[in-house]
Image (cartoon, rainbow, N blue to C red):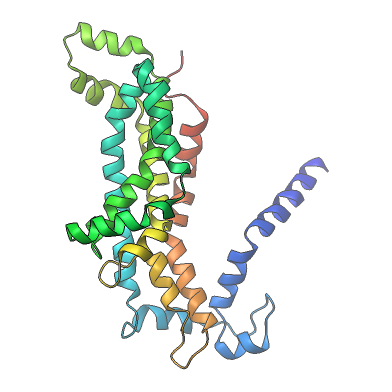
Length: 273
């Protein structure tokens, strides 16, 4: 009885939290006529026309370009953030000064509204020729990812016994060798978590994509908004819903496939005993 009650509560909570997604998914399989006459959650005549239109008709908006732009920028942002934060996290985890001063400063930067950086960033990107480029978008998304990556890696490295570092130094290993051969393999689950969270965060970023791109490097989050305008005016809700579902698939699939690794690295220390 208690188990059944738990499942009922779980299903109700899951449906409530994901209700907007469910409605969007259902709408994406309806024709424009059925959307106008049937606003419910039941589909009388399912159709893939909305998806076919979005994926094949690139005369107005090229969804494949938007997907590629988001993928490229997210990979740049995630990998670069990991490269920058891994040695920094090691220093912070092993240094009293870094933990008390540098760590809070960097992490608190994420609490500052991003819109504050809009004007200076735009002017700097215009001067550097980085506007509407995937590299430029990836660089700013790297900055967005750094605080989260730093938190995850600092916590993971702090769980690694300092005796491993000392043993490596006794054997004559340099700091770089210790990072590569000792720390890196031990905190690999945390690195995977950092990659997943960083990719999802970069993929979902909208503000900088809207502000710093216009044509060639438009990400999926910004490109999806273009599909809301139908050719004859108004909003084609079926097409717009299909675009939103397609745009949400990559981060959703990554999160579902890697949830065990994320859960394990977030709830357990890298080394125990």
